[in-house]
Image 1 (cartoon, helix red, strand yellow):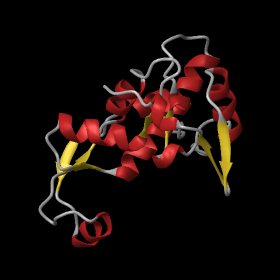
Image 2 (spheres, one colour):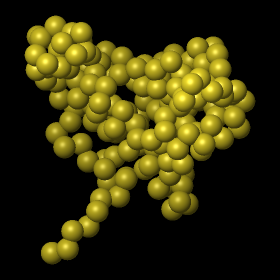
Image 3 (cartoon, helix red, strand yellow):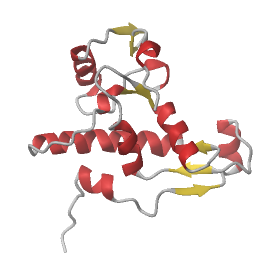
Length: 160
């Protein structure tokens, strides 16, 4: 039987037993500055998508806001930054895949920033595409060293 690569939409919908709460290893607890008995949420990809879809035109959120909301929802101490970031990228590519297929229900992934208002180079089309889409919504992008950030991004943060 030939191997077939999963589509981005399939990756988005395949939860692999997630969400789940685990205890961090000693190494992770130290790196993240949390207690070894902390409850760490590993979210499901679709949960990340659900939050990203809530961000209205002209507004922004950071990946850390997503993590905080998910941790609160599941009564965890912290939400895993690695998986949340990976799932945000999966959401972005699944949205672009739906767009290419002429389907609606797109997720405005370009409105989700890294900490400090930094644009995400891993989104479809890289920094240039996210920059273009954010500028269309009236945001100003500025260079900050090798990174690009949304000027005064704090003014546009969406609270949910």
